[in-house]
Image 1: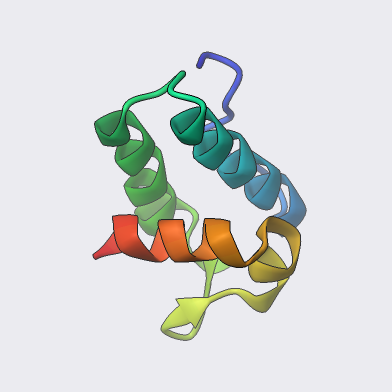
Image 2: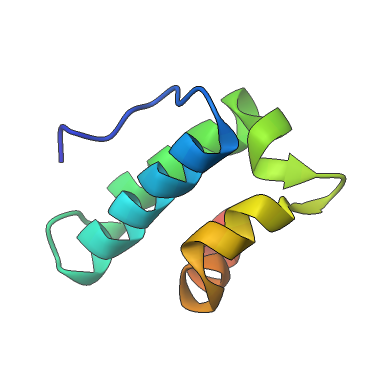
Length: 77
């Protein structure tokens, strides 16, 4: 999946990229290690947008939904 942006500019852009990663994983276009790599990259390089305190940013949760949020939390463990 070459259309995923590694350095999104805004919280909304990051949320849209997370949606692409989760949907790509669920549709088997991306394997789990590649999906985890994106999430872990964003957790270190875009942490200011991904997190609010120690929790996932509520704006991200609102955009991506409950199931994707649970998947992202699992990948971050």
